[in-house]
Image 1: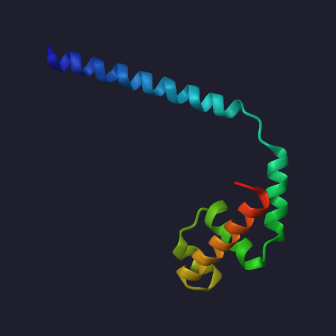
Image 2: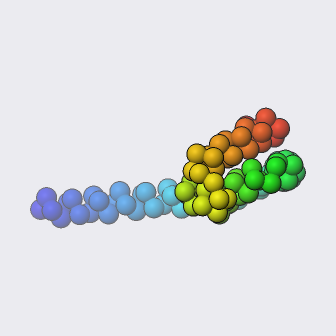
Length: 97
């Protein structure tokens, strides 16, 4: 009896979680993007030095690890991390958090 009740209880919890996740995803998909912020970020990204811009694009747009980014930029992982940090600091200062 306990196994049966446990099974149905888990199913109820799973269904409520999936319904909540679907509602959150639906609400997020209905929001309009902030075009002004996107354009400001794009302009500031274009103003970064080439290596900093490449490091940011590889890390966040291409979703590469620090080691992969460093390998593609032909530098150490610490240098790649520093390039990303400096670029993000500049972007935050110019575009805002």
